Every structure is written in C-alpha cells, then in structure tokens.
Image 1 (cartoon, one colour):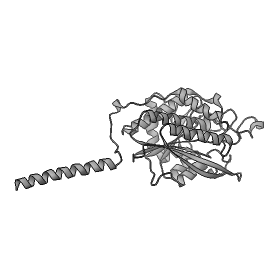
Image 2 (cartoon, one colour):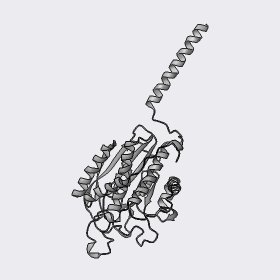
Image 3 (cartoon, one colour):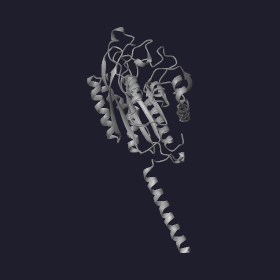
Image 4 (cartoon, one colour):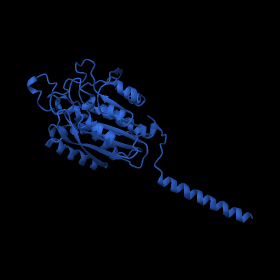
Length: 333
C-alpha cells in the first residue's frame, strides 16, 4: 500500500509539472512588477530623431496620393521593418470635404505580438494640402512641408522603434501612423472632416479583439519651447494615464514643457480612437497659451519647415515617452 501511494504521488508530481510547463509555454507573458531601480531605460538620441524629421521633409509635402506621399510611405515601412517590427499597410480611400477621393494608408508597426499587455503609440504622417493659415495670402494655396505638424511625431516614434529593437521590452507595443489626418476644412466644419485615417482604423482595428491598456498620440511635438497642456478630451477619456506621463515628465525636470494646466477640447486623432474604438488615448500636443490659433505659429503655414524644429524638444518628448514605456513594462509607471 505504501509503495502504491508513493508511485501515485510521484506520478501526480510529474503530471502537475508537465501541465505547468505546457501552460507556461502557451500562455502570454504576464505583467510582473519589477524593481524600477534596476530598470535600464534607453537614452533617446536627439541627432537621430532630428534626422528622421529631415528625411520626411526631404520627400516634400506628403499629401495622400502625391509622389512624395508614396515615396515616404515606402521609406517608413522599410524603416519599421529594419527595426524588427511586423508591419501592416492598411489601405483606404479618404473622401475629403472637397469631394476628392485620396488613396491613403495607415501604417501599423507591431512589437512582441505574444504579449497580451500592449501600449498604443500614434501620430499622423500626412501633411496639409494647403497653407490656409499663412500670414501671406499669396501663399495660402501652397502645400505645407509639415516638419512639425506630422513629421515630428512620426520621427519620435521611429526613434522609439529603433530603441525597442536594440533594447527588448517586456510588453507589446503597437505604433500606428494615421494617414489623411490633416485634410479637413477649416472653420466651424464638422469634426468628422478631419482625422480620416484614425476614423477608418478605429472602425477596422488591425487585430481581432484589440484592446491596449491605453494610447498616446504625438502631434506637433518638435517646435522650440513647446507647451503641452492637458486637453479636455484627453482628461475625460484617459486622464489617469495622462497624469502619470505628466508626473513622470515633471519628475525628470521637464515641468516647463509638460505643464499642469487644463486646455479646451480639440479635434485630433485621439477623439476618434476614444469615441469609436473605445481605447483610452491622450494627446501630447503643443498648445502655446499666447497663440492666437491655439497652436504654434507655423501651424498650417509655409514656415512649418526644418527651421521650426528643435532637437531639444524632440529629445525631451521622446525621452519621456521612452521612460514611461519601459517603466510601464515592469508595472512601475
């Protein structure tokens, strides 16, 4: 009898060990609280991210369907793939307010597909078709280069992709570059005239049952001396996560940029990600308090070129988001 019990106990241990081994192999990695003091956060490279802005501007205006747009798309896809991402090109037609139908593409770069816990990072990569806010009336039909409005957010995300490739992170990260964000009608036009790429993506998510913990939108983050306030939409839908990033930025000594002041709501990609996809997303966007337009002085003008870009601004925004990601990966944000 003792021998029988002994044999059965050994068999039970063997079966339990085997089952645990199978489960560990098949289940996605779980979130583990780590020691933040031992966490190595990659250093964000100002020269690299600045060059990513320059490379986009070198293609000229990136209006959906234009030669510059097509060439830039190929470059972006190639870059993400070179940094180890699985890339999806989500093609769609942007029916803009003028009646034109523009061939457009949302670019999705995915890291660590086996992780259930995921963070969404986004920016728009198209540029405005005309400089309708230019102080020179004769230039208002000219296209916008979009070094800051479009190029800066994309550049920060490209540098983060490069860092993730070189410094593996224990969490899923999805980078989505929205197209056809900036082709809307100025004035009191419906908000749905804007952000056509994020509207399409939010109704056609790239993965079944896709639900990241939260999303971060970067828009116009590269100008000199930016002011990132807390807009009404972000506060309402994703205030908890926004406050963590602002708190981290202040702790890193960047309270002069990430200011604890509330700003009014605005139409940007995060509106539709929140309202259609039901994914909490906040916006890091430059809203200088003294601005007459509500945005930096070169917004929707012909001066949105490399002269408006600051390496310091790019580096600080990139370092804050990078630090937040790696701290989030061990549950210590």
